[in-house]
Image (tube, rainbow, N blue to C red; front, side, top):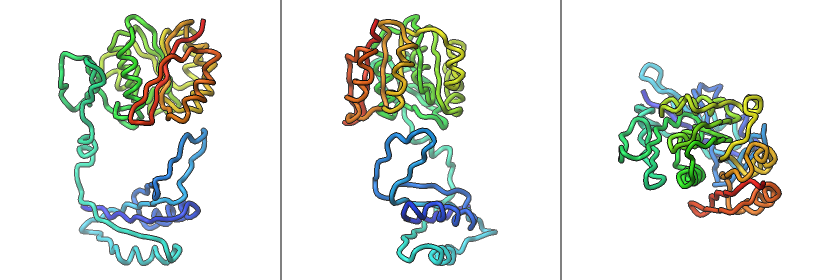
Length: 299
C-alpha cells in the first residue's frame, strides 16, 4: 500500500475551502504548513492563527484494489480553485511509521552526569542520571533549546529534599529530572490533558510516580496550597508575564525560579514584569535566540 500526497499552495482565505475539498475527495488526513517561513509567535488562548500563504496537504490511501488516478484528481481540484493555484503530487511508499518517528531521537547529554535517553535506546553512560523518555504527543524532549536550558539549570542547583513546581510540564521531563536529581516532591501542571497523561507515564517509566502529582491548572489550584522552594516554567513570554503574581504566591521567600520559552527580544519585557516580585540574576542563551531567566523570589 502506498500513499498519494497532494500539496496545494494557497492563500489564507482559501485554506478552509481547500481543506474541506480534499476531505470530501477522500483524504484520510489534511495538514497545514507554512509556505514562506513566516513566524507565528504566541497565539492567545483560543486563537488558531494561520500563515498568509499555506501549503495544504491531503494524504490519500493507495491500494491495488482501489488505485487512485492522480492526474484526474488534480485536474478536478484545479477546476475548484483559482487558476494560478500551485499543486504538486508525490507518492510515498508504505513503511513502519512508528519506527521512522523513533529513529529521529538520540540520547542527549545535558550535563556531565545527566542524560535524556529515549526509552527504546540504551543509555550511553549507565552510571549517569538517565531520564528515560517517551515524548508522546507532549512538548519536551530535550531537543528544544528551552527544554535543554531548564534541564541544565536544574542540574546545576541543589535539589536535595526540595519541593519543586513544574508549571507547564509538557512531557514531564523537567519534573522527572528534578526527582531523579534529588528533589523530595514535584507538583506539575499543564493546560493540555495530553501533557498531564504524558507526565504521569514518564514519571512511572522512571520510577518516580509516587513523588509526583500532576493535573490541570484548575486542579492544581485546589490541590496545592503551599509554597515551593523551586519553580520552573518553560512556556511562553505572554503567559509568563500573566502568571508573575501566581508564581510569587507559589514560591517561598528566596525560592529559586527559572523561566524559559523566551526569545531574546522578549527578555526585557519579562524582566520588567518580574522585577517587583523576583530578583532576576541569571540569563542564558542557546541556539542564538532562545533564552532562560533565573533568579530568587524577593522576601
